[in-house]
Image (cartoon, rainbow, N blue to C red; front, side, top):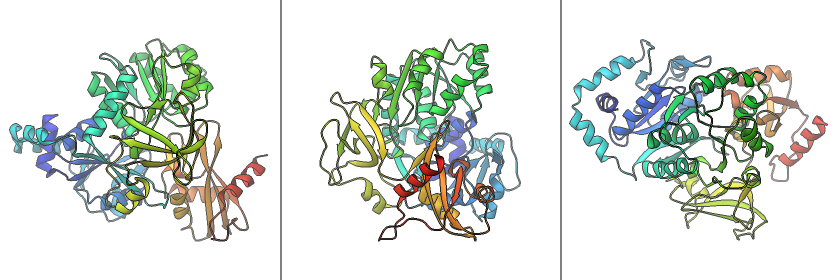
Length: 480
């Protein structure tokens, strides 16, 4: 780690500098990140599915000092995409790649020789719990991504606690499939491993065949991820051929998980510790959790109770706290609440009130014993296979098509992914597949609507806002 910190300092990373990282899960990702953080820098993880414009927006928004990245991933040529967007930022290629426009990883690490170890250790010692560790970008309901500011102290406290609840222990082996650009794979992934002496096994992409083989060959004991991961493993026709006897801990990272899935993970995969939890990036991805000893019906039918030292309350539309058993918006307060949105105090004040309560936009019901169930979303956001999608952002991109005159997007149920996007489009000379293909060139794949339904006009109210409940009715009618 010291060598990586020295390399980051030699590269010019100073306290408070923002450095992006754009790469799939790997050991090199971890080493690169620790170097930036140890030098006092602020990490800006980029979604590996981003297109050039999406990455360029964040690099410019944060005035990034540099970007540590691979040349490409999953069919995307990152360097060419940044060049097309005329992004001028120093690039370091992680791993063994090389390009005339980038510094190689070997040259980057060789730069460490110019910085003595004492200076690197002094930088590390100067990093405190209140210093920003990351700016985690999440799409906003207005369509413009917002950077969630989190600190070292928040991260260590939250996931030191949660790893303890999940019974992480030295010698465990954790297959980390959730992407490192998200708090789930990063902080509840490799960071939690380092805190507890757990072996982290990074996996760049999920496919059931290779995951089953790794679970067996590497004697994996911990597996966390979205519901689709566990559903695909349970349904795999060759699952019985693999030795999964070492698997001990599992948790589904989603607010809405099919209740039978928890019992299936326990009974069919043989996992003894199966827990649920709830959080959002603005709350360091931790607000509630179930715990060992909770009844399976409570684990399966809720997201647990408020995490230690974190307050939760549910309020109605005028801010009055609702009684147990009544639905209300979920508010969160505690050390876990973000420091705000990077460079956007107005957006920050919209979600964090003067009393420090974070307004999540999620609708929940809390029972008399304190177990919270998420039942709806106040906002239009939906979740595709563990990834948040905000319709306004998708609508903004699809509206740029020359033949699209109006568009609205909603989330609709999907058996495997939980939800997928359905776009209602007013346009001409278009086909469903052609528009979907066009969108794939401009958006991360999880944002691209699975379905396109052409309509003569969108239902709007007197304020000209699209009436999305009406679109959901139209979708149900079409499905029937």
